[in-house]
Each structure stands twice: as structure tokens, then as C-alpha cells.
Amino acid sequence: MSSRLFVVAGPSGVGKGTLIARARAALPELEVATSATTRPRRPDERDGREYHFLDEAEFARRVEAGEFLEHVSYAGNRYGTLRSEVEQRLRDGGSVVLEIEVAGAREIRRQMPGAVLVFVAPPTMADLEARLRGRRQNTETEVSDRLRIAAEEMRARPEFDHTITNDDVDRAAAELADLMRSAMNAEEHG
Image 1 (tube, rainbow, N blue to C red):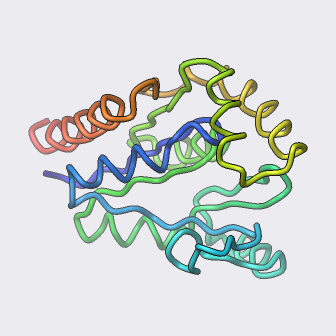
Image 2: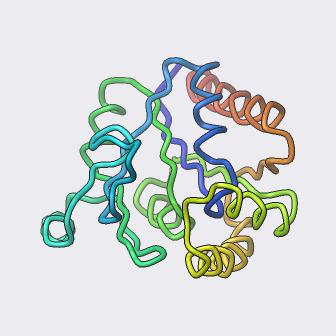
């Protein structure tokens, strides 16, 4: 298998992380690039595992130094993919998956046109709202903001190479793993 960059994007709360974790169980050679963020760390999170947690000044310094492949402001915080997180893994022959927002996926497409972009969609917006509320990680204002942003992001689906509707997590994860496996094999034989 050859190295590929996969970008998995979609609305907050749609289950991107769960699908990626399950796809990685089926494809252990797939690596996840850890994003950087300015958002506060949650109690169960560890720096360098879920995110590289940076303060605003350090994030801005790295933007200015060109250290990000993409970076966005989302729901009041900044998120970005460190160039070093992706390029070294690809050079070493690994395939990398990024879990990022739609705006970041657009920037990756611009900078790395060979990336495979996958949009994860909820079955309905009502399902997405139920998931966001069920997580109990966000305030009512944050849920409202995320739903407003999600409605805008849903319009970006045609910009992606593939769309997976997360109506059944087992099926959706298998679909993601299959398309990743196929893309890695196609590159090798193409």
C-alpha cells in the first residue's frame, strides 16, 4: 500500500472521531495527525493525544511561521493542522487521516490536491442536534452555534470526493475503511 492523505470533515457531533477510530482498527497502518487548538483542554484529554493545546500567542506565532497546512477559527477557538504532523508521516510511507472542519478541508485540497476528502453527514439535522445535546459537553449557546455552522457545512458536501452518512456507526465505519483501503491500493497500482 502506498501513502495517502485522507481528510475527514463534517459537522461537529456527526461522529467523525468514532468513524476514524473504527477505520483505524481495520487499518492499523493508518496514522492520525494530531491537530492543534486554542480551546481549553477537557478533563479527560491529554496534550499531544487529542490535540496539541496551544495558547493564542503560540498559535499565532506558528501561523506566522507557516507551520500550519490549514487553520481555522471555529466556535470561538482556533484549530489547525501542523505541517510537520503530516509531511513527515507521508515521507515515511505512512497514510495519514485528518479530522478537521470543512474550511480546513478546503485549504488542504488547495495545498495538497491529491488528498482524499470524505464528508461525514448526519442522517438528518434533528439527529445531529440530538447527538450534540446528548454529549452534554457544550452550553446551549455553543449547541446553537454548532447547529448554525453545521447547516452551512452541509452545503459543502459536493466539494468532497466521498460522502458517508453516519446513520449506522458500524456500516459507516466499514464504508470509511473500505474507501481508504481502496484509495491506498489504487495509488499503488495506478
